[in-house]
Every structure is written in C-alpha cells, then in structure tokens.
Image (cartoon, rainbow, N blue to C red):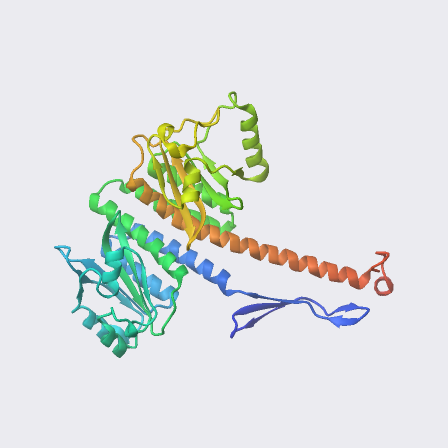
Length: 435
C-alpha cells in the first residue's frame, strides 16, 4: 500500500507481506521520487492551456495577461509583468499588462511604472540586448538592477526575464519575481521560452496579417498532440501529429522526426511523404520498410550528409540546392526521393541535443520564417519526448520491482539446488488442500 512522505515528497510502496523464508520474515518496499513525474505533467498541462488561450485571445495584451496569470498560478512565481520597446525603439517601457497573486505588490508595480530601461540596463534591458533569458538569484544584491531598493521594500528576491521574439525582433520582455532567492532553474526557463516563442509567432502573424489560418492550424495540432500524449502516452503518435503540422506549416513535400542515439546516429521515429522508388533499390527499400514496420524506427548511422550536419554541428541547416551543397556528403542512394531543398532544426533539452526535425522540398526553398515555425514544434517535441522518457523509466522501474518480487518468492518456496518446491511450499499446499 502507498504512503506519502511530505518532507521528502516521495511515494513509498509497501507490497503485501511479510514474505516468509527459511530465515524469517521480511517486507518488500520501494521508494521513488514523485516530484519529477508530477512536474512534467503540470508543465504539459500549462503549455496546453496557454497554447489554446493564446490562439483564442482577442488581442496581444489579452494573450500576455493570460500567460502571466497562468504561469504565476501554476509555478509559484508571485509577480509577472511586460516591458515593451518605446515608439522610437530607444527604451523599454512598462506595459499596462501585469499580474500578481499578492496584493502587497501593488506598490512595487506602481513604482516600476516610473522606470524605463535602455539596452543592457536592468533585468529587462539586458535581455533586450542579449535576446536571451536572464536569471537573478537575488535582485537586491545585483549591481545591474536599478529597482533593487523597491524590490527590497516589497520583499522580492529572485527574478527571471524572457524575451518575446517575432522573427529576430524583440517585441516584448516578460519578467517574473518571487519572494525567496532561487538558483537558476533551466527547466523553467525552457518552459517559459517555449511559451514566449508561441506568443512571438502569434504577434508576427497578427501584425503582418498573413498566414493566420496556418498558424491556427499549428496551435490546434500542438494542443491536440499534447492532449493525445497525456491521454495515451503514445510518443510516436504525438510526434506524427507534430510532423504533419511541420509539413503543412512549411509547405514541404516530406519530412521526419528523429532522436539521437549512441554512436552517434539518428533514429527516425516518424516520417511522412517519403516515397522510395523500390524498383531502383529493392534491398535498401525492404531494409528500411521492414525496420520501421518491425521495430517502429529506422537507424541512420551515417551523419555525413545534410541531416547529419544538424546533429554534428548542433545548429539549423538550410540548403536550397542540396545537389551542389558540399555538406550533402555526395549523391543520394538510388531510389531516394528527390531532394530539392532542405531544412533541419535541432531539438534540445537544456544544453543536450536530443534529436531533430527535418523537412524537404518546399517550393522556393526555406527561410527564417519556416525555421521559426519548426523551432516552436521542436520546443513542444522536446517536452513531450522528455516526459515519454520519464514514463519509460517508471515502467521499467515497475517491471524490475515485479521481477525482484517474483525472484524472492521463488527463493522462499523453492530449493536453490534442485529448483523443486521446498517444505515451506509443501506446507502451504497442504494448508490449501485442507482448507
């Protein structure tokens, strides 16, 4: 039966017993940390709800307000606000959008409205310059935090800021604060960066008023993929939904999603639109198809090609003329579909490269626009895959526990030398027969 330890946040499972052996009695129990699995599901649900809310928001400020509120309510940060570039682009100004779960922070908000930040100054200013997230463990001790005095008065300590990018342009900076000092949480930064990336795409679409239908489709697919994964735990099914969106969003003919395995090599877990000419290379076609049908994946150990460059160089690869591109590694194997243009985007978990999304044959080639769309899908794919691996570890853990329990039971009731039932087993059989 399970018991919960509040101080250590663990689940302890005590399995029926005690077990009886020739040496006496004992109890089998297992303890595992439950926080990681709970946090992963919470993050997925937050991402799902925000994705849907952004797609339904009436305007930019409504979307931002939803994000601040949901992030604070779900993650424990007590204050969130938005900073936007001034009309002449020289300063960051305080946006009217903000949220706090603590009434006592209204004064901090009022005082913050008096500030503006040039590039590099303050938490928002340094993010504006670097176009990258910034974390401060204790803002009252940071020399580049002009609001340190009012933060001290409000009791604020830890702070983090995330840029909202539309293409290469920063359209806003989100920052969040809490009452306690806190060391950098890269997982939280990655989660909020994924949300910021979605907001950035929405802003860009609405400002240019093009491709709105495609963007809505992407958000719908992302929400559907997350829901599907939460309900089924089927990573390959969810990745196929994401890949379908990637092809539609970039108007590509075919593509794949793969993960990095030892070697290194690339393991393709989902592909669509790749039509081999089996008559030109029967052996290769059969090997590829049989591998996918029997095992659910295809392994490519050779990385001396365009998709391999994404893995080895850990960066986006765009090629609008693969036939003449020296990174292609030579000619394609006979029967391979024509490759007229290629976009490969790496999938990261923190600093670790875990896979990639590759698409091919967009008419006119690929630009940063298509890259930004795939990067959003990579963020979500990374979170889904991370949770899939956690689930697999949990399954393996349970299987190992059962195996050990069965082994101990066997030792208790069977002779080690003859592997025949021992006296304890015989007595139990007699007791059952009598009863």
